Image 1 (tube, helix red, strand yellow):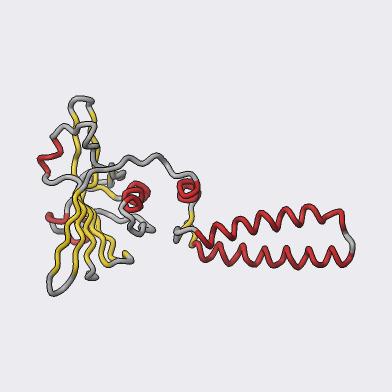
Image 2 (cartoon, rainbow, N blue to C red):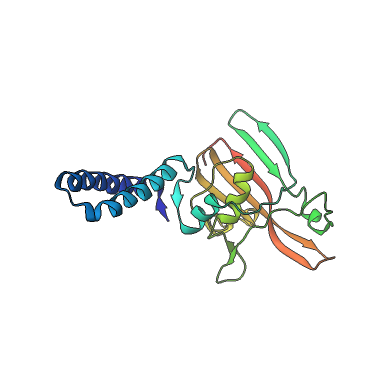
Length: 206
């Protein structure tokens, strides 16, 4: 994973070198390398244009591929609520209202909740969100900024049982991002996976 700003700087320098070299070979009359220099400049220019217009803050092969060729993302069913108190403003996106709803059969009109791809920790009791791609797909659909890294299950940090199945991003651009997971099951098609039950954005930093 590389910061977009870093790649932009590198490509800008390479493009500047290419332009200087183009001027030099035109002045010297080295026409045999003219075509290659022009093609290289065009490629670097296209890459620079993409880097300056993309909303990605960090680049990987997978994120660039999904940015250029967006995957077919289902339209998830959710409710959005807002809460205010003297300390903060909270946005809550709910995909599953209660844990018992995981046993409900979703119809075609109500698609299943978004999957949260996790990796089991060595102890086998907790799960880590190492690759944030599955979360970022949902955040993008909600028109929210993506996250740039994964996080462990919050209970492994705090030691509190109430923080099980919770993932918190303290460095989120809009405040504090909390993701709660649940288990979705559909017995009709033998489908079971960990899903995002709620996404909470708190303007307060923890």
